[in-house]
Image (cartoon, rainbow, N blue to C red; front, top):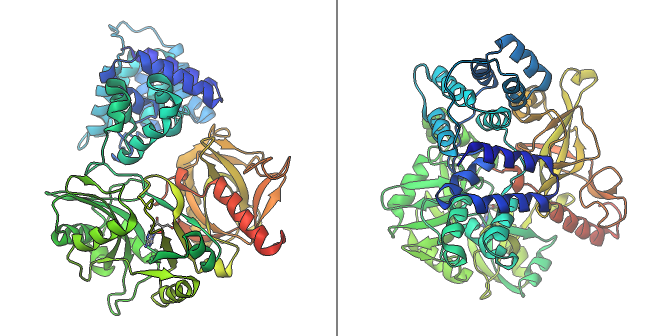
Length: 588
Ligand code: AMP
């Protein structure tokens, strides 16, 4: 298959903003691709070579890419650099330079998808001495045989700036349209939720149709999308919603880990599917040693404890374990425990379809519990008084609240979904508006006065899963300390975008735009109708969206969340509803 077919498809995708049109373009295209190539084509359409949970290490620096463009096009590095300064996009530079390519007498071989995948894989795997030079030459080689459009997307892929709008949800829609029917869409999404591998799902449906999709199973080593909780504003409402009787667990304030325990080793995944085994080698070892079964997938919260007193410490302490270097010191200085709360798989059996009480019983018998590996503190509560009592106990134990869980027959583990089978209630709900918000940074405004020359405020957005885009909810300028203000460019500039990104819906125009990438935790005083913000626009009142008033950064960068895992527009609408009910529509 020629790479130019792929590049032309990317170009058509980029030219439309209609998700329906994108779906059809992709569905038509996927049908023309050989089944044994489809997996790679799907990854490439997202600018990747692997599924999300595989560490992506393509990321070539812009300047290295400019050198490759110079070699392939025959233009001077100076003129190429000038164009790069003007556009900021190596893809556009490559396209324009290759269109004005100086005649070179070398033999040109047409670029196939196979050759591109081999070239990109070589770039990814090159390390050691002279690796930068070797990467640059491999890219130059491919660019040499590229037309302008092919060059544009090659340079976007190697610099991690693909973004043609082929998000997971759009690709799942396209697979349903191309190989099945709309009614099959939920089952295709389920296959994705239990494997987190969109390429594998595409290959499976193209080769075996819906029967093969239905037969897909959870496997040790492929992360499963995590189940999420809804929230309610009081313990009596939580208990009532769950039928007057439910399980309550302490809600620990740490890092969620999904542990895939195999016979020979353990992999720990974060909720954004990063491999965190290196960060918690002690936990990985303990889980393997204490597990009574051969192959198990469990979830738990890793929490730091005070080495002197054994008390649980706030979240910030466990983040020391997230750094890349000095892990040995962190393992020594910041002891961690894991509190297990669910089991998804056990020795060949997918347990996600079992009700909660059965999963809990299995979980409790699956490990030899001790200091390092424990299950969450849990009690079955019968009525609101018992619930309040359990909640107070959770606060005394320095937890952030409780997680209430349904005990009914339908209380299965729903991979990738948020629902009322699990309900969270935190102590913050008593003090502030509602929960905190995890919002994506989509823009910045330059500061004035003391903040002159820095970013002074940020434009923040919530995720809209229905539309697959980000809607703005507030301008955030409070809660930044000096260190954070100074560090903002390093944190954010990797996501700089010359224009409003395709995935952002905003009426406010900041001084600079960012692709959604960084997620910050924000607390606020209230949610109000807003003429400026685009979240839930026209839903509650024509011409108005929902905005967050008096937002303040809590100091917590949610680097454990992808932007798609941040607070959704639907959640903000629900919170607005709770707030209106508690206060007759006035502020809290
Ligand atoms: P939040 O991040 O506020 O939406 O709360 C959900 C998170 O709480 C989960 O993703 C887990 O990381 C964490 N958590 C802590 N304790 C529990 C528990 N007992 N059961 C489930 N999740 C828990």
